[in-house]
Image (cartoon, rainbow, N blue to C red; front, side, top):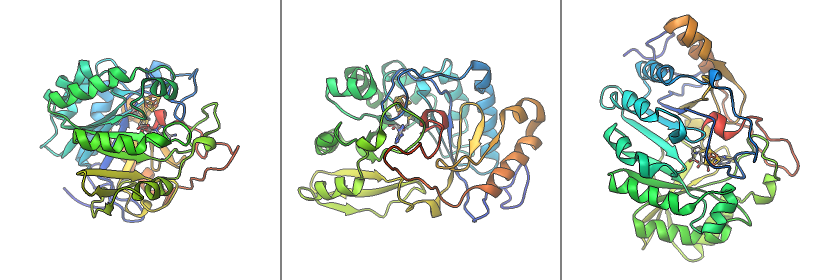
Length: 337
Ligand code: SAM
Ligand code: SF4
């Protein structure tokens, strides 16, 4: 494969020399939960005709792979509520070992009992499951009605099917702050990695997000009062910093999007369920691929991707301020977390 240059088979390199090898694709903006920091209670979802068909998503995945993308993550919304999702996973999964290193998924876990075996059979080996609390009432409060038992059974099913599971927990002041150490110890006992995420100001959610914003350096300092966190050399080109937790055999990731510490090595772009591709989670810089996929063919898609890369922002401009409008008006469920 050629590198650099412009066109349908060149690598995806932006104007800062960053090579895009990782794409996150949101397959739906819909979800069976309504996490308070992510969605409004009464979300308006997009009409189906605005959403890429599964065939179009697969076609796009092939285009990305042809241009050097090595990892694809399916996300949403909740990817496992998209009808036919296993077909899509199977189509893209066939490319693992044939251009693609890895196909992964981020899920809220509610549908895993049903889908875990199918995901494994289709070529998925690792998934991220979001779990902000293991306490039933608290989980129901944060997700506006979710059943944590269903998610925990889903995690067990995933592991039984041979999937490696990583837990994502959004750290929320006043909501789950007092449960973080407990979650870390539980993950350690289960042999699961844990990643903590700071809330990001994305989309209106009817609540004052700043009241739940919990800086992770505060969390880390508190954990360090009782545990030894050894910074790990592991980097993924993403926003996480990793620590090995001595004595309990756990690995902890901290995603601190409000700092700029990861932008220089950014290796990713994000595709919304509509086919809009964003150069950065924290900017509105984008190209619309849906029409090009439907009418223009590969050359039109290639041209738009080159335009996206030429304008991919150097870094995001997130800040979280009381009563400020969200930094980016679209929800995480649209762009794909
Ligand atoms: N529904 C799936 C899930 O919850 O894992 C996949 C999509 S969800 C948008 C992906 C991740 O983004 C989840 O871990 C979720 O907790 C996180 N997330 C959503 N909105 C966020 C926000 N405003 N700030 C930080 N993380 C957020
Ligand atoms: Fe749904 Fe995931 Fe958003 Fe929660 S974080 S509302 S599970 S998309």
